[in-house]
Picture 1 (cartoon, rainbow, N blue to C red):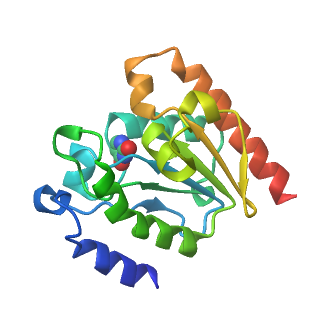
Picture 2 (picture 1 turned 90 degrees about the horizontal axis):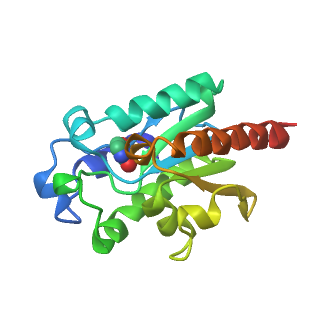
Length: 184
Ligand code: URA
C-alpha cells in the first residue's frame, strides 16, 4: 500500500463509530521514512479541526521537548492509535482501537521505524501488551524483531503534573542516545 492509498482509505473509513463524529481523520505528521515513530492516543479537538496530530497544548509541549533536545524534523514521525477523535476526549474503546490498528500497522510498514516511542498508556498497552503501563516500561527497550520499543508519559499528563516533565525529558534523551547507538 502507498501513502496515498492509505490516506484515501482512512479518509473514507467508517469502521467504527468515531467516524460519525469526526471533522477530520488525523493520520500523522513528520518524515515518512523517519527512524523514530512516536505513537499517541488519539486526536483531540484541535487535531480534529485541523487534521494534524499534536497541534494543541500537549503537542506544543512535545514540540518544545523534541526541539530543545535536538531531534531533527527528519528523525521522527508522529501518529496516534486511533485516527479519529473520541467524543469529549474520552479514552478510545477497545473496539475502536481494534478497528483502527490496521492503519497503524500500514504506517509501520511504510515508515519502517527503528525506534517506536509509545506516548502514554493507551499506546503502550496497545502496542506492548496490557501489563505494559508507563511506569513498567519507561526507561526500558523492548526489541521486537530489530525495532526497539519504549514508552514515556503522554505530554498531556505533563500538563496535569509538572513533576513528570523531568522524567519525560530523561526518557527522550534515552531515545536520542538509542538513535545514535543504532545509527553507528
Ligand atoms: N493527544 C494525542 O494522543 N494525540 C494527539 O494527536 C493530540 C493529543
